Image (cartoon, rainbow over the protein chains, first blue to last red):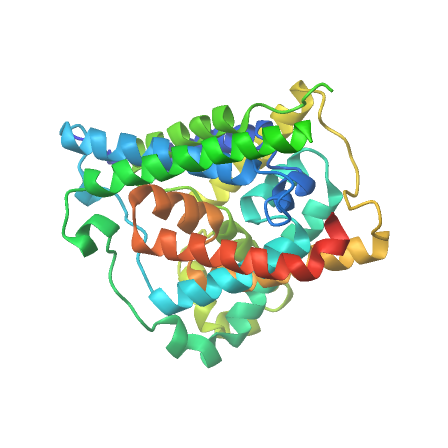
Length: 191
Length: 168
């Protein structure tokens, strides 16, 4: 039997709870429940968001493709996030505005509420209301929502290259970014 | 000054390992916005089942005999409990309406809610948020993840110029 594993519904939900718990714990411990730290990236005053996010992406990405190469994980049975190019691009642009206005995103709002922030609860209520609004408006946007369906391509697939040809530069760019941010913050502290 | 948080690199590596474990064990990903969409659907269904049942987008939840018994919903309950545990054990838990010093309470309630509406609407359009599409898709090297992350940062930097006076 090869990973990922077939599991009963109860076991799957149990894992969702445990993994969610760890995700929330590490988000909070990384300062991701604090809207000042979260929005700091957009005002160039705090870089915890890109540091945490790109470290997580690099670690998970390296592990995913390493486990696949070692035949410990069947990558074809991992649900790759599908691409609907224009809806995801426009969605990301609107999302960025919402992030700046509220100071949270959905997971971090949950982490903020878990650390006692009532404004994070208000943002969660807003996200819930926004989802309902989308469902109500769905008939108008259905055509756009379903447009530019590209399946579930990955960058290595699109470029026709081995996955390490993408993973290694991503690691390189992330490390470069971290070195740059540390130096820049160090200089600002000394100034 | 005592830093209340872990290094973002340590917390990021820990989040990355959690995501890797999810890929390995379940072949799925992280998620946060999906559960709030289910919550919205189920709340509306209590108030007006006829109207909710007529909404095509929500049929994906209502066709399921128990929509709340889902991966996304259980994960989000876990996120809340995990954050609560982290905040309590580190002495970081405080019930507060967090806002920039210059912001009035009324304005903070407005920005928190209005930003949330935009995020909720956009997450449905994009089929996920920073967790489900950004982190998960990004780590998979999925095109979706990188398109979404780039769009969020570009938009965030642009609009921050307008909202600078509120938060900084």
